[in-house]
Length: 425
Figure 1 (cartoon, rainbow, N blue to C red):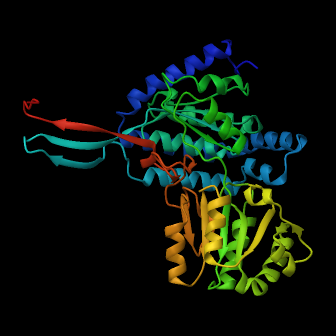
Figure 2 (spheres, one colour):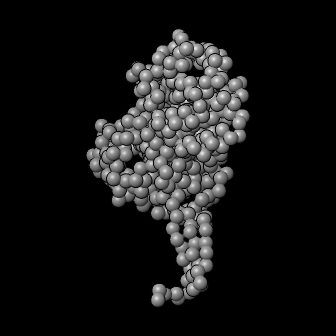
């Protein structure tokens, strides 16, 4: 498939895109905060003014997804309702309100020879974001990258192509109206998969790749890329209901973690329950889960309490369902719960519900995940919920960035040295 509105072949098209992004990134890195903020606010205004057209284009994607047989949970990720557009624009306004990280002196010291050394935040350069489903990522990623001084190349999934192009049209106009190079934000206007392969080979122009989507997509990107990749393969998130839990609080947290939006990487996939409170906690919580359409799969001890649910297999403990399915295991101790998370988890988001300070502290110390919660839902692992306005992605890597990535995580640093004729003896 040829790029939309382009007569170039796919190789020439991606080469032009990446070269343009590199050129634009050099000027954007030196652009002041006020101009970057003005561009983001112009995007907000465009999203609000063009809401009806945006939702018409979004409806085309929704209808195509239904014809293709996508599940309701995945279609929900495509939807741009009034509420979701408001959440998106509120997130962009929050980004504007945040401190610009570019130029921040992270640390500084003076050497005995009088030389002043400063460690200063700088943009990463050019970021390629390869993502599925969620069209709100188009606006949020553009705003975050702009504020942090990075050019960005966006490649969304074919299931959201009409929505993404509609948002991109708004972004492009906002950049021009604000006096910025429109090449600061570019979208790949083709669904041809060859475009992704070409992007992943453009190490001369692209500094980092961030994939967002299912495990299959992220693994494919990580395996093919010549460029550093910030990633999380999947979100196998747990909530452990401790023997010292407030059971009303635990039920509320577990229902939210599974049901509120099940097709997201921060939704709970396995619920662990201490044996001492299982008989009291499980029946009522299971009833509410089933009322919400959740299919339960349990271990042998769980099925003694809930005999009508399916038996969980070994594969269920590893599964990222992204759907209204929940694995449930009754554990005999705190240690068994933590060992389960260590074996089957994906280092994304895990929670304990407990009123015991020792249990809480042990959990936060012993569970090695990007986000570790005490008495709160894993669904809160999100840039907006963390006060970042939005996030560029949620990293389960340990190098450079971990967890929701906001403005500081979209920068690197350089050393700036001020001397007065010093030389090395």
